Image (cartoon, rainbow, N blue to C red; front, side, top):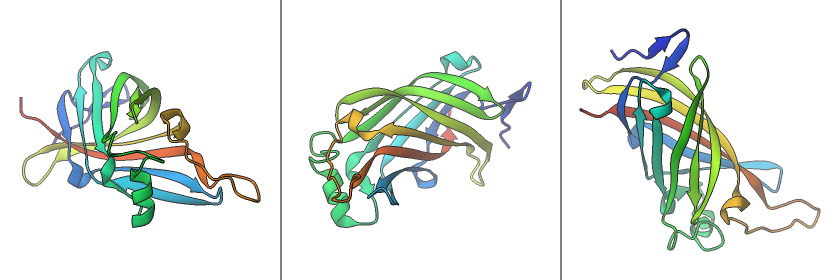
Length: 189
């Protein structure tokens, strides 16, 4: 069994390179609809890598999402989100993230700051990340689990389509919560 590295109460991902396993991971989001309900969605095609080092300053994470894989459970809405009003998947096929710093926030908690690129707009974002655990699966693969969440303003990335409601307010919220759960497998050296 892979043990999480612990030192003075700090829980860490064991040193090494870890590839995200999409079959056991998720990349999702939440956004308000008409300011009264929450719509949830996910991307079904994505990849990612964690490069964990003994010196946290040398560690990094990076990944990408295939925009066309968006799924909110409503095909017409998904088509609109893929189109030029939102993600414009024909011209901007991927969403990218690459960390610029990782800071320990106590116990198993970290702040992962990095560059998020959507529609060729890159902004610095922060993700609160928790190391969930580590272990060896029944096939002998070493795994580590993490959960991440953060909030962005979609208009910062050129996602500005909007409808004003007659009674006031917005059809689509501008604040988007990003929710990521990762199971990553250690790569062979």
